[in-house]
Image (tube, helix red, strand yellow):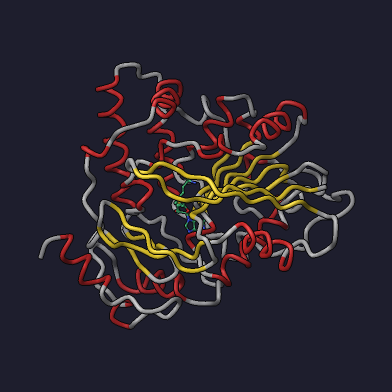
Length: 360
Ligand SMILES: C[S@@+](CC[C@H](N)C(=O)[O-])C[C@H]1O[C@@H](n2cnc3c(N)ncnc32)[C@H](O)[C@@H]1O
């Protein structure tokens, strides 16, 4: 059976949100091994977030996407070099970070990294070359973020669900001190592949990488948003093994293409969890970009014309409500801003929500 046919077959099993048919939950997984792979799938579909399994083993090559679909190498579309068509600003960013000026050599380099990353976990953002985009630059608060990095010696910037870290490379390129950046992802290999993609080492790009599952309380527990002065000293970022020591210490939290991967309960959990990391200093902010909807609900997206996945997408109103009602319910504590925008993916404009939550 061809990959596309297999994909169609699997997608035909997909049921309404948050209930996963047994047939899908127990898909045979190529190159997975025994109980570890089973617990991974269960973890992603469970409403409790308490297992510590991660995807980072290269022996377990699969990824969960959206509220109700699993991706694995069995049925991911094969990568397609013909779809590589970076926008001028993306080319400029790639040249500035990699130092590769020759566009054919640059293409070969990007394709080589794409192949490796896709083998680890075949996310659509890898297939669609979104890992060379820097959506954080679209934020109206982008310059404010750089100013925080320039003016506050100890300001921590956390890039959550960082993948290969295009946004945090761009923050560093534009002057946010790399040593004050923490990049985190479930998949450790993505963080490492960031060094390959951007041709850096730990020495030349001294940002701090910490791999883990944001739904595992041992990695990121829910704490009340910090109010008043933070009592604990800023932790040594170079020795972090979880995000918990960062409670109340992050001046900027960037979450690009991250919240939309999860269902309603998970989005609220995640919003509370990252809010606990935010510094109480006025001006501290959480920002992100996610797929948008006219009205909150599951929106179906396709890649390359093939029906592919549904994501819980928000309108500006429902997104602001999520934060005001579930996270920062004290009046006047934060300003939440969310606006529609469009991001070009494989030549098509995709409606997105550009948002931030700023401490007043
Ligand atoms: C759509 S990608 C976005 C990557 C990156 N922000 C970018 O713009 O290129 C989402 C990322 O979230 C990570 N992720 C998914 N579930 C996660 C979890 N439970 N904890 C931490 N990271 C997770 C994935 O591994 C993936 O790298």
